[in-house]
Length: 270
Image 1 (cartoon, rainbow, N blue to C red):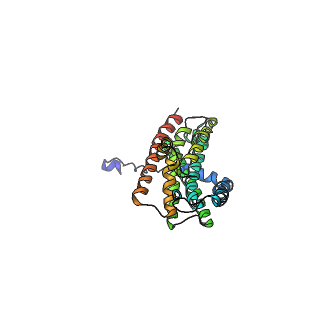
Image 2 (cartoon, helix red, strand yellow):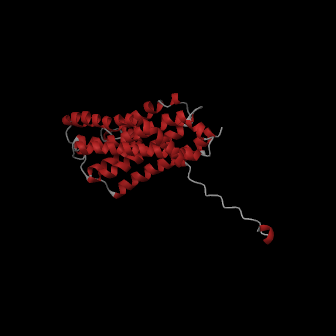
Image 3 (tube, rainbow, N blue to C red):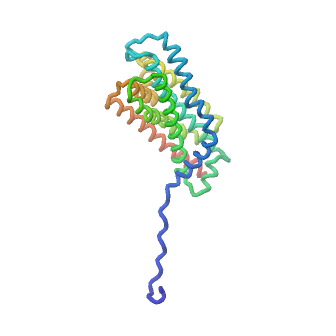
């Protein structure tokens, strides 16, 4: 027909590129199907033991001063630990797995030889990190409800608040972990996780800290996560303060994502 009409046949349009990050996410979900039982301890048993030991145990000998918003220590402590646990889960899901995957012979090095780009590998893994942190936060809030540690129905909103807190640590942790060996990752827990646990309002109000430490606490993502989750759990949240915490945590998460994108590109294309 084309010879008769003199019109060259038109090649069919190429199908639009699909979002390949879902392939990377599917890989992590497939692996998780085989390991999910081991996460029950971290997601449920750990918060239950912490809340019972510190909230119900130590909380019995702690009075209810105005610094605790006039509530029991259990009600004050539980949402703070929720945010701190989300921070820890975010770092656990990002630091060691990313460092191992980016090392020679790791899964990232295999995946980059497929049609997946570095950004696809990063986005797929970060989506899995977000899912894991959200699952941990949901289990933690369920434990809080079972122990009566909440004071408001707004505690349900603490789940996305805690998930955002975890991502504010997971994304920069992933950016850093992609550039170092697995042996170096343990430094995060010694120099980041433990100090933040102690000085970001988890166990006591930061108003009791010296001024210099108080200022440092105010600029940490964990303090914003603790204040957001605590105000929602206690029912003292305001639109202005909550929005400020969300904007800060989102900005840290976005910055970490940009840094991670650059780190992944440099590590996987060499």
